[in-house]
Image 1 (cartoon, rainbow, N blue to C red):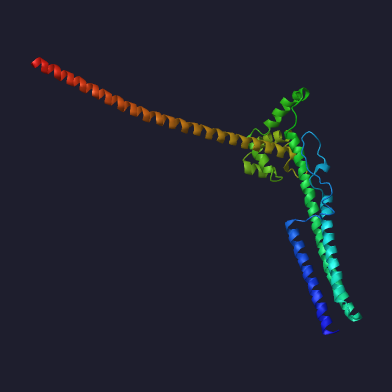
Image 2: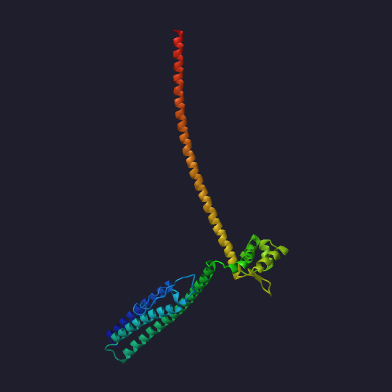
Length: 314
């Protein structure tokens, strides 16, 4: 192998390695930022799905703004286009490098090409793992939207019918009554952190013996708490979590309204004090004017008296 051909191969291989390194950096950056560009020619023309939340109709997967299939297609399209571009560059580089070489030199170039392709395959497997991870995140987000949809429907449901009202007053009062005591709210808040035995709950709340049984029976009767049959631990139910959140929402709303009302009262008091202050200052000025006028009248009266006395003397 001539020195010129050897330098030519090394130069082409150096270019290939630089291209691969740039590709790896781009893929790493996009993976870290979760940013994968779509293939404009193949993907942008596809109809896009948008999420339209409507309380009066069922949640439709076709209206979800992204889907795991979309992510898979997008990433595979992008990855395939990148790999194809790199592969074409490798073929062109090898063709330039092997131009005019003998068989041994061509074999060396082919060996270098295989090493580059192995590196690309490793990058592709790494990207495949990233795709699976992103699809998992998409499923989690999708489940969160489903849960949000179901809970929002409960909050914004239509008014109760006449038939439902017959059971609502009694059941509603029982459900609210179960969380109308601060000790029961304390028990629910502790169980929100995880299952607990009676001893641990009694130690933290100070509710013991028959009092503990009374409060826990009310919580269990409302289906907010249930007790394990074997281990005897108490666990909060999904309904119990929602009841606790309801109490927290009411508390926050009450605090907000209270602070807002207090701020309005203080603002009104400040305005009234300012008006009173202005009125007092004006009254003071009027009093001074009256005093001056009275003094002038007194002086006139005194002068009249002096004139009369002088006339009498004459």
